[in-house]
Amino acid sequence: MPVTVKTAEEIELMREAGRKLHEVHEAMRRLIRPGISTAELNACGEDMIRKLGGIPSFKGYDGFPAAICISVNDEVVHGIPDRKRVLREGDIVSLDAGLIWKGYHSDAARTWGVGEISEEAARLIEVTRESFFVGIRKAVPGGHLHEISRAIGEYAASRGCGVVEDLCGHGIGTHLHEAPQIPNFSQKGRGLLLVKGMTLAIEPMINAGTKNVVWDDDGWTVRTADGSLSAHYENTILITDGEPELLTLPCK
Ligand code: MG
Image 1: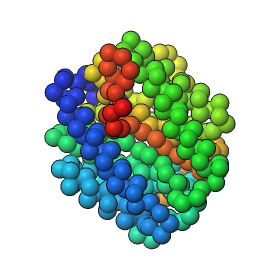
Image 2: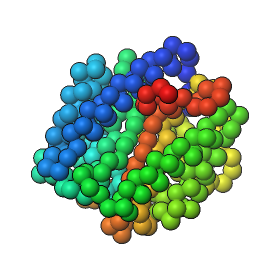
Image 3: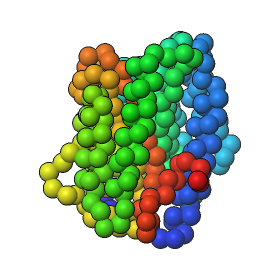
Image 4: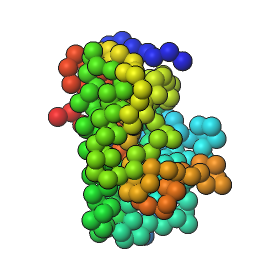
C-alpha cells in the first residue's frame, strides 16, 4: 500500500476520529483502579466508541477478539481482555484503542498506573511518553521518517530502557495500518521524506529491561522476554506546515 497524503476534507474526518478516540481513552482512564478487570475496561472502551458513532477497528482485526488491546505489566502489546484478569495495586496497564469514523481511522495508546506504583514503573511510563514527544520534534515537512525513529530510540536507550524492535508504528487513514512502517530505533538511511498531509501513528513500546519480546501461545499477547515491565504510548499525528498536529490529544 502506498503512502497517502490526505486532502483537507480527509484531515477534518481524521481530526474528528482522533477527538473521539481521546474521549474513549479518558472514559477508560476514569475506571482504572485495583479490582477492575481488563474485560470491564474493554467493555467501557467499546461502549464509548459506539456511543460516539464509531466502529471499533481492532475488533475482529486478524481475528482479535476484543475492541481494546489491554496489556498488563510485562505485557508489551496486544493483551486480550479477560474478566479473570483483575488489576491490582501497583500494576501498570497499557490500553491501545482504535476507531473508525466515516471511513477514517484513529489509533492511540496510553499506559497508566493502578493505584500507587513503584518509582521504576512511573519512570518507565514517563520515559516512554517523553520518547514520543522527542520523536515527533522530527515530524516536520522536509524531514525524514527515520529521524523520528532514531530520536525515539536514542532517547529511550539513553535512559537505560529497552526499545522494542519487533513492532512498529505505521501510516494511518482509510486503513488502520498503511505505509510507511515507523520503527522506534535507528535505521539505515534517511527513510521517507515527510510531506504535509501525511498521517502517522507513532507508538514507542519501551521496556524496563531487555528490548527482546516473546509471543504467548494465544498468538496475540507480546511480553518482555525477561519479565520486565513495558509501557506503550501512541498518538495519531498529522504532518503540517510546521509542528505536527496531535489528532488523538486535545488541542493546546
Ligand atoms: Mg498503532
